[in-house]
Each structure stands twice: as structure tokens, then as C-alpha cells.
Image (cartoon, rainbow, N blue to C red; front, side):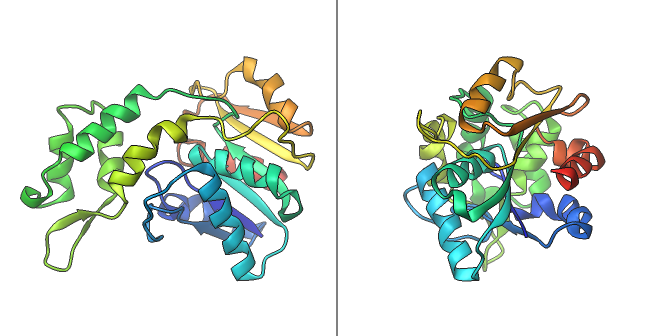
Length: 241
């Protein structure tokens, strides 16, 4: 059983293609973390909240030990679950994130663009993407942000995510959820994007302090989203984990 946790502002939808590719090796279940996708909205949002949600979901599904794969924010959540609930994690796979603090100026720009959007005057996702252009230079990122828009019952557009709660939680999401004593001794694979600075060579010692059995694989041509940018190589690594 492979359980997949998405990144910030993502959802299980981002994993449909890679998840389908992995069904020859795993029974794949991709979750929506709280305040994202189809999951419930809540005022609180911390890594402890996410980890508790995942364990409660495993309990509700009657799942004992699973292979846990997390990307970015989902990777930090997966690390915390593995360290605090090691009997529930058969193996851990972390995509392009390390157990350390980050500061993401680009995320603050993206959140500003989303919070400034006048939903009452938006007629399509394409129009929203154009309005993001003043702040967000990347076309790919503008399209990604717009995936969090959905039509309401009256035909107007709204955020599917809990934008206020996620905006308030951003500083907490940047922090390392692990403390000095957190450790998971099971098989662990970190997959780093070679064009990304989320996992740097100097992070390997820190990773192995918490995950002594960790293997670190780097996909040279990938950025922060190896499951989409270099899907075939990413899937091959997950199959071998």
C-alpha cells in the first residue's frame, strides 16, 4: 500500500498520472491534506495537525503499515508521521524536501496574488491566470494557482482551498517539524531535483541524523516537482525504494 501526500496548494489530483504509473507495484491512495482539495477546512494547520490527520485516516481505513510518500509540505508531514508513528510506516519516500527550516519569498508573492484576486469579477480560470501575471511571472505557477479555483453553486468562482488558513499557516509550513530526538530507522528514500535547491548536498548529514537508513537519489534534470517534470525516472526510483 502506497499512501501519497501532496505539497502546498496541491491536491491528490497532482498525483493522478504518477499514481497510475505506480499501480503495477503498489495499491496507490493519494490523500488531500486538510484545507486542500476535497478535505475539510479547519482554522488550525500545523505539521502536527497533518500528521494526526494521516494517522486517524489510516486507522479509519483499517490500514496498519504503509509505504508513505510525501512531496514538499507532504514530505515534511510524512517525515513527522514516520518519526512519531514508526510502526505505521513500512518505508518512507520523500520528494524534494529536507528536515530543515525554509524561507519562501516566492510563496509570499503567490499568496498575495491569490488573496488580492476579486473572485466576484472572475469569469474563468484563464482570466484569473491573466490577473496573476502582475505578480507571478511563471506561466506554469499561474496555472497551478488557478487549479485551486472552482465554480460555486451560483456559477461564481471560489477557492476550493481554505486560503485564509493556509496563508496564516505559511510560516509554520516553512519550519522543520522535527526535533533533535526524532528518528525513523526504517528504509527511507529521499528524491532530490538536481535543478532545485530544496535538498542541498550539505543537507545529507542532517537527513541521516533523523533517517539513518536514508538513501538520497538526485534526478539531475528535475526541478522541485520530479513526479511531474521527470515522471518516468521518479516512478522508477519509487518502484525500487
